[in-house]
Length: 216
Image (cartoon, rainbow, N blue to C red; front, side, top):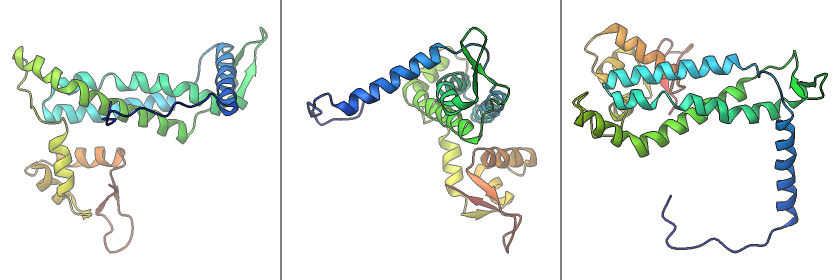
């Protein structure tokens, strides 16, 4: 969708490398077509549930029903788009059933890289939805008098507040940046969400032990 300055890509020939790449994709299509049964992926499902819970808490804090709508969809895409890659990564853990079809063996297990991929897809999907559909959703809710919708980018308040925090900060800094006015539950809930999203980490040693450090 980006501006291409009215330029076209080079007209290139179909090469042997292209052919081999297509053959690999075709081979995996046949592999996937031979699969049966259930793919055990509860750790990824749990991680996506927690991701949605954090985003829902952001939506509630922003008072955005449009955001509440958007955060319900990314995890469905994340797990469906990630599973083919996950199965291909763990193909050595697949076994052939009596009917000749492949299924997940007893040792089939997902790992941290599978989880990272699913969460990356969820983050990306939400970002796309915010860009293309957030304004539409806010307009609809405004017209229906269901909520007073902000015309700004969704999490703008959260992003600006995070930028206000120093590189090393305390819970008091979070209180001031997010304007929680001393509400401890809100302060520590926000800190936990920031930690779970990998945006900050608690300092465990040194002169700043007990404080937090921004990772972005």
